[in-house]
Each structure stands twice: as structure tokens, then as C-alpha cells.
Image (cartoon, rainbow, N blue to C red; front, side):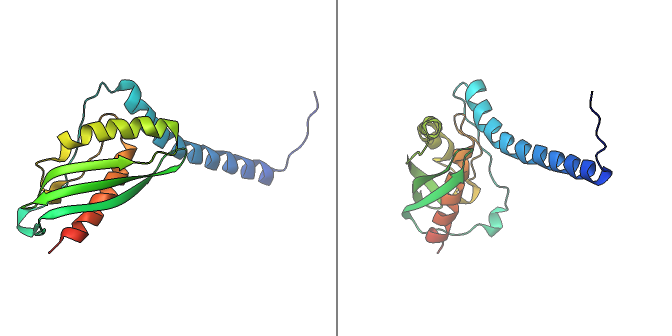
Length: 157
């Protein structure tokens, strides 16, 4: 066995680089795990969350149909979706989402999201609209919520 004497400063620097690498990898894997775990454990159920806000500070929105794009980061690529909302009296009356998936896995998740989003948002006040996971797709929700923020700005009167 050959023994070498490595200076303490080199050992400390190596340890710090190793710990930093673990944090970087842990951050990457949490996004992948969120997307992966949704597909392996979800049986098609949907859930959403809404922002809590007082109704006295609600914005008034012009009735109409509005379209905006939203993008989101996946472990492989940056993906985008197009969201069209029909608003009447500040409430979502109709929703249409189209995707342009860049990765095979994204195509699956966007398809699930598109299939379940209407059940989550039709009939919901635009001020309360903030989805977190739809039919096992959690990352697509980020793009949807970004598009909704743009639509809110367009529709604000």
C-alpha cells in the first residue's frame, strides 16, 4: 500500500467541492423526482391549489378570450405551452392549452395536463387561479401559471 501525504488545504477544498456537487445534484434530482413520482404514483387524479386573497382587493377583468404563452424548465429542456382562457365576470368559462413538447417524456406530461386542466380551472375566479399539479404533471403547471399571470395583465381593466 502506497501512502501519500495530502496537504490539509487540498483535503478541505476537495471535501467542499464534493459537498457543493451533492447540493447541485440534489437540486436537479428534486425537479426530476417531482415529475417522475407524479407519473408513477398518480392514477389520473388531479389537485390544485388557489392563492388566498381577500375578495375586497380582487381585480376587475374585462370579459373576453385571452391567449398567452408560458414556459417552464424540465430536467431535459425548457418547454412551453400556449394557454387560451375565456373570461366572463372574472370567472374562467373555458380553457384551451396547446403544447409543443421538445422531449418525449414532456409530450406525455403535457398530454395528461391538457386532458385534466379544464376540470381544475373552469368555474374558478381568475384571481384564485393557481394550479400546482394536474393529472400527475407538476412542472407543466409552472408554464400554465406563468401564462395565467400574463392573461391577468391583458384582461385587467
